[in-house]
Image (tube, rainbow, N blue to C red; front, side, top):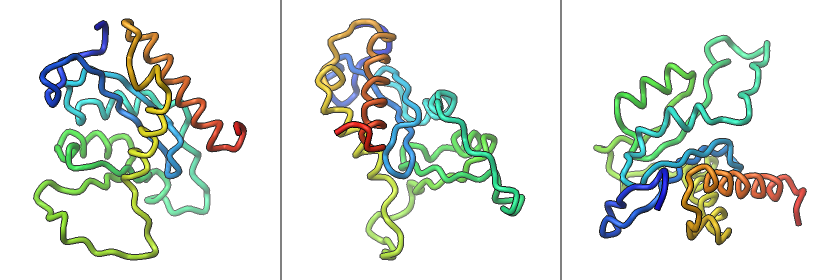
Length: 164
């Protein structure tokens, strides 16, 4: 199938591609990385953070020093590894990762907070509306990454209200 593909462990080992996507709180894509479907999610964290196309904002001088460099990063149970925590601390992120041992049924619901994780799933759904992204026809990894980045740009323009 080409570069950046690998046997999908959930689909009878057919070749597939994994997208590692970083979004802001509204679902606007900030970084995307491609890998083979057989690659673990937690191994793509460093590459995804390195692929950021928008620089992080400069801290406000009135903000206390300990809060200036902390940005929250929400991840699911697939990222609950010591390597991920170390990398996020080194990069200045506050990790919000639900531990594997934590019971999912025991959740304290507060109406003032909105869910965090569904934002990325929604962005993946928006990307799947582009047929060339949903069904990979390109054999080369760079051309497919270009289509993914074009889809991310169109999603960004649509979220900003620049496209109808």
